[in-house]
Image 1 (tube, one colour):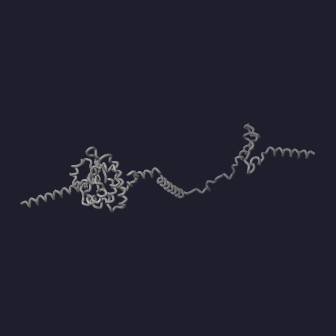
Image 2 (spheres, one colour):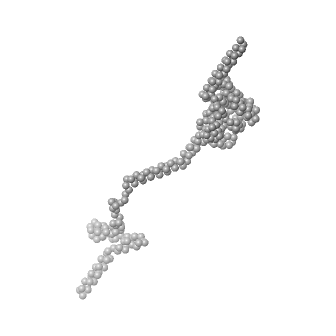
Image 3 (cartoon, one colour):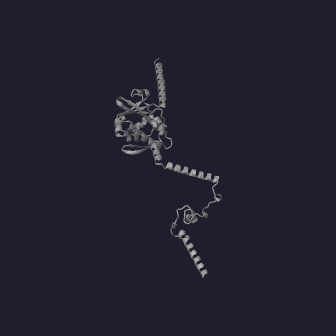
Length: 313
């Protein structure tokens, strides 16, 4: 009887101990369910009694809830880190990619492309039609037309120097002349507001630089009616046999009024008697050409005088 009572007491103690221990199922929960931890009864005293903050059971429960095991330990000696050569190769590869991407971004930059477009091309309106001029291809020939100041009653003087025209054997000659033609016409419209005269410097211009018949005819046809009407004089300095012939061919295509405005001048001195030369830019090659012609003319005149004197004796 005493043994039976002792066994019953042991069974009761085991049952109480099992009730006091937390169930692992309550802590870990199912694999498909959210973990739900129930806060155990806690004693806020600072002693090591059961249920207090410093009790061993509470600390063990919190460590189990954090779920930090040995599999998170990292052995730094076993890590495969890149060596110095791999690092240099990676940096070079990265730099090359950045340079390629940077160059592509610059080429695709709209502002950069717009700046290039505005630098190389000029849009002009001639005869109520818009044209685009390739300014890069005509850059060496832009001196062909210039402003020479004004003469009586504020009439503009436009100087056209044929010696600055491209040679006929240059690359893309027709393309250059096409854009140069548009440049000359558009510049003429900008320079001229009212009456004006054109000084065509023909001296020191070899045959390979002379404009063709088609080019001159088209220039005349593209000139606005206002410009044709306001033109008071077309002076050709140092006219050659070729330019005289060319103008003779174009007479059927030009008006009689325009033909009457053409005037031939054989020297710069004679030109200076018609218009003021203060702001007229004369190229050095034409100045030398004029001096040589003057010397030749003086020599020929002196020779004729001597021959006449000899014949009289």
